[in-house]
Image (cartoon, rainbow over all chains, first blue to last red; front, side):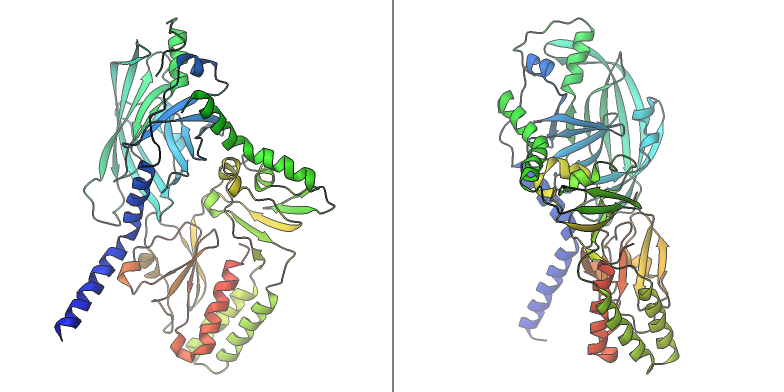
Amino acid sequence: MTIKKVKLLAVLVCVSLLSACAGTYRTYYEMFKLALSTPEDVSLTYSAIAEAPYDFMYLRQGEKPRVALALAFIEQQQFKWVSGEQEMVVTESGRIVRTLGLGNDLLFLSNRQADPLKQGAFRGTQWRTAADWQLGEYGTELRSTFSEHHNYQLTYFNHVLPTVLVIEQVAIDTKPRFWRFDGSWQNLYWLDAQTGRVLQSRQQLTAGQASYELVYVSEVVRALKRRGLVVAGDEQL
Amino acid sequence: MSIKEFFLLTLLAVATTDLTAMEQSDALTTDAKVEVRVNSTLYAFEQLPTLAEVLEPVALKQQWYWPASKLFRLNTVSLEPQRQVLLTKLQHIASNSTPEQQNVLLALQAEVSGWQLAERVLITVDYDLARIAPAKNPRFTPGTYQLLLNERPSYLSFVGAISSSVRLAYQPATSLNEYIKNIRLSSFADTANLYVVKPNGEVVKAGVQLWQSSQLQPEPGAMVIIPFQVGWLSDEMAEINELLITLAVNRVY
């Protein structure tokens, strides 16, 4: 075999190896593309949030600037939040259960009725679910263990709100399609200590994906009002 | 972005569909009629409806798995001639084949004979997407349609160069390679050139002999076509494979 043929063979092997991982690289590419698309953090005033006819949520994906989403529909126990760019994030009891328009979208999450976030019971609780992803992963099995930690304080509009921090330790049970380091991670949910409603969370939906940081700003405003705390209308969050 | 700009953008995203629909329906008050059978219930529309309008009465009745939704048009060109060509070719080859080949070909002939066929409309059917993205909310043209909505399918179908068509229970995060191990392939199955008909009608070529494709995970509800080796009886088998894929895409199931 000539040197030329050996080189050609080496190139073909490299191309084959790269094409085998195309799905993963495409996922990262989509994330990277999205990360560059929004210029700055959105920030709304207290009065804008309090007087809006819709609920608002802030969402940050990874290192991307924060965007605001409006609650467009409440259906089948799901809250459907839309952005100004025709994207949708669907939440149930504060957990993201579906996305539309975010690149490699989460299509489906199973066993949602048994989600401890819905049940409100966390101490030592376990939960199993399976996720379908748009770019070719179907039925990826996830196993979660929950713990709760009281007396966490979050500050919004210069007022402190007492919260319960729920930590969800997530591990992928499915044998991965591609070798990876990151088979487990933590999701965090801060619940209003009075109502148990989620005020803020940090969620990673699958391995290798950037976290989503969510702040339910309209719920925050309601929590402040419920406690009789006064905020100047032009104060921003 | 100011709060006013954000409100405007958000409202536009949600409301543009309805606005567009209203403007167009004023202009489209024709005698044309749209009938859509959603699963087993028939809905008639006097004005041309958008996809969201068609889905609105049924969208929230169950937890539909939108990626497995299928839309067919019933009053257009018939696929029956193509079916008859396929059945005739299968019969012709079977009459000159070994007993094993005959069994496979005649089993496929019986399978395809029982298929309900209609023209597949290759659009994304998703109520949420249709409501937030005007481009994903097309208006129906006059005609009769069949819309199939499903909860998440729990099976995969296999058809083609196998002893008989089979439906396997869907296994989470399982590659096509693993499923094929449980299929009784005929000796003339072409496992290097499998075709996966995704529930949305898209066809993906795969092969369990090609290691780089073996990790492909078929969607719940997908139909896997196992073609015949073309070298077996050359051109005629290639035509059979092509016809089988065409009919599978347009199969109402």
